Image (cartoon, rainbow, N blue to C red; front, side, top):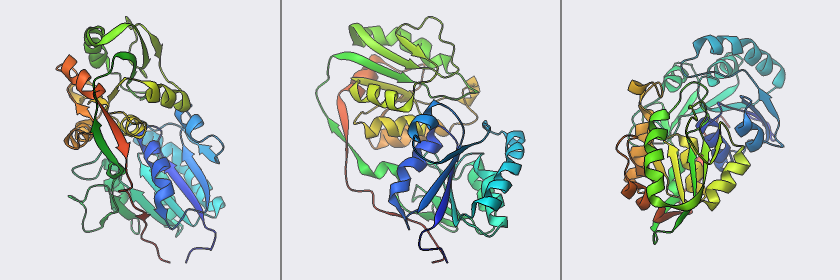
Length: 324
């Protein structure tokens, strides 16, 4: 049984996993009590978690099993010395050593699968499911069942609202901050399309990660601090993003219907096709315009700019399965 004032360890990789856990946290029932975070060090985590208690661990890339092993001693030390009542994670690889150490130490563990996974669990989710006692949650009712519990989705609290197409004077293009994969295919096509829909002298902020910035004009940066990026998205007439869950959720929260362009593994842009699932789900809900990088059109850009997204009260508590 948990203490009256529990201590919770929240574990998430930077990017969409951290964005999701940060936004789900206020909905968690029971409440987390005293919180400590584990994540990687980058501008997003430093900005988003400013003022929080944070432990940073070395970055774990997709399928980074060697890096997972390197983080294992730190996970054991933290679990042994931290006196945590509960560990909650949204993945990805950084979650594995902390969930394993916690369960082997008798600590209650919860794994919330990413809203990116519309057709079943990720590799991290499948590994977590093999750890005895880890409590599992899907954000899609369609594949929940068995050991996987449904407690709602991050997307439930948003609805689209059509508006007149604005003059496009401010644009944000965010390709995320992945440290392994570029997305030059999207950049090359956008460089052709944007001049056709934007006003002369339009302000364009590009967050390109490791993508080659050659030939891009405007404000071009590998990474933009979270608070600054949110301000820019809030003021933008058009938001274009890779179909990462963090980029998508940020745009929706700030009232924008983004253009989402999925990265594809056949072009060495990601490890799998999960971004197409995110784009497809948000496109189905009309919360985003989904288009492939090489077939994106000016009509797609105008359609995205001709709507806003409003927040509703549809998302209820995210109730954890606890022993108490």
